[in-house]
Length: 147
Image 1 (spheres, rainbow, N blue to C red):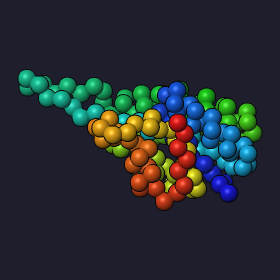
Image 2 (image 1 turned 30 degrees about the horizontal axis):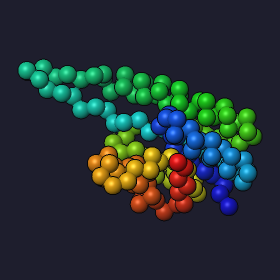
Image 3 (image 1 turned 90 degrees about the vertical axis):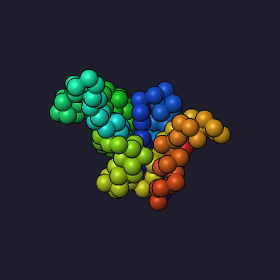
Image 4 (image 1 turned 60 degrees about the vertical axis):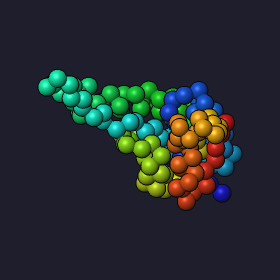
C-alpha cells in the first residue's frame, strides 16, 4: 500500500502522537519512514533608530536550526529503527512549513504523509491558519491526520 511514509513533526506532544501512528503504520505495512522537520525561515532583520538588529548571521542560524532538528528527529529515528523500520530524517528551512513538507515528500519519493492537527474550527482556525489544512489542500498524496 504505502512504501515510504513521510511523518511531519514540530516536536510537540501532539506531533508525537502522529509519529507514533506513523511508526505503527510503517511497521504494519513494512514501509520505510521519512521523519521531517521544517524550521522557520531566517528572520528578517529589524531596523530601529539607525541600527540593524539581526538575531544571528545566516550560517549561525542554519547551525541552530540543524541542532534543533537533530534534537527532534534523532529520537524518532531511534524509535523507528527499534521498531524495525528503515528510516531517513530530513530537515529544511523555509518560509512556509506546508510547502517544505510537500517538497520533502516529493524529494524523498514518499507516497503518504502523516501529520497532526489541533482540530481548530471556526474563527480560531481562520485566524491561526493550519499547516495541516494547507498540506491537505495542496497535496496530491494521501494525508493521514492524527488528533
